[in-house]
Length: 430
Ligand SMILES: *Cc1c(COP(=O)(O)O)cnc(C)c1O
Image (cartoon, rainbow, N blue to C red):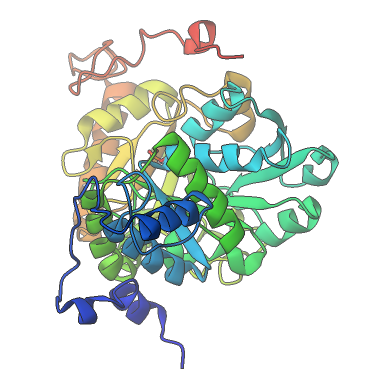
């Protein structure tokens, strides 16, 4: 009988430990591997160059590493994939997918909103991709004979908008669909089971789970894996073995962490809905945010990411960021601690202003990545921050409270109001 998720999370990718006579994952830091038998080494390099999963001799650290390979194996098992290919970051993983797709053509269809960095990468045509931006309903009409990839994210960052993977796959026809499933992890969503060709995770987030690893990984079929390994070998965007070790260790507790954080998010959402500073809450577990009924069908749970809009726009949002004490005001997500950030000012600042507006990413929007602290402690802190923000913005706007909205620098040293939008000085590669 196939093992259940929690069992796979603990054991996957550890098949050879018994033979090696060890209990914990070995960390192989070799940059090179002895090649006393030249014919075997040459055959190995030929196989690895062609994208083989493994070979008798790893040859060189940018080509193959056993510690990284074990993590890839574990992640692939959790996603129900043939294999997985790990990279130095989520963006390195996305870059490799876009490069590998160029075998088929240069055209990419992408559904907004996406993670700000992904949007930025596509919007600057750095990789010579020709991009058509689509909505979940306009994918079919955006497809061309040279379309190599359809890119989507669900839940989308930062609005938590849900996209029906199967509906996009149907519209894409024979074009492979890549789903960025970072917000869900393999615990809550397996896009390959819904027809996606590739699933991407920023390992920096929930997979590592403790805010101390930068990584990316793509799980897919063997032919895509081979292409991605070749791109990785050619471009060198490899994952360090120490990072692979931490990620693999993190997989063991992933189901526990994801479910604990999800339970906390539900508590925060319930409280936030009733606070008079909160105009709307965006969370996949709210019926209004899941019109297609994807929670339960495409996702096994709503997850631990949520966003909400505060009354009072930018000054109020900045005040909340300033006033939290237990929550960490910071970008990123999926850590054991709860993070709060302002998408328009931080993660999505690089996105075209018109696209921000279309996606509803306003100046009052804050995004929370719920951690695994006690949820009532989190709410106590957030409620206090909301109350103090209300006081500062609406009740005593002239009081000398050092708020982000009232001065140009908040206590974290982030300039929020004085910076022009980078629209005029954005990097231009095209
Ligand atoms: C963070 C993130 C990425 C990029 O990953 P890095 O590891 O930071 O390069 C891509 N997609 C989503 C949804 C993310 O949250």
